[in-house]
Length: 122
Image (cartoon, rainbow, N blue to C red; front, side):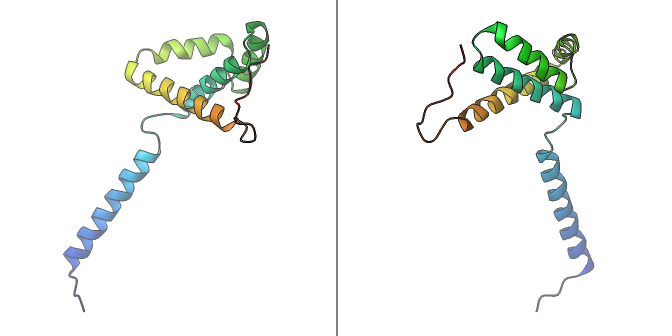
């Protein structure tokens, strides 16, 4: 039978707590706020719509509608975009995340039956 003294239990508890805190911090996306996440999701949606519609006359109204659903106007989205450029490293990470999401969603929309991606609408 192993005997544990109080200091061993305290150290083990402390280490376990630190590991949990580090894990939860890593999973939370770091320093992204809810506004940052909303921006990334909106930018992801824009990338997907632009890929789906080659004709900007068709894409633009859909982009505006989607922006409105996400709580942006065209002007407020542009303003947020400009605001984020003041933090280039964070901004790059956000855009990379949006691109990766859009690519992943595009791959998920590939039909397994025919192996062909969705075609851009004329």
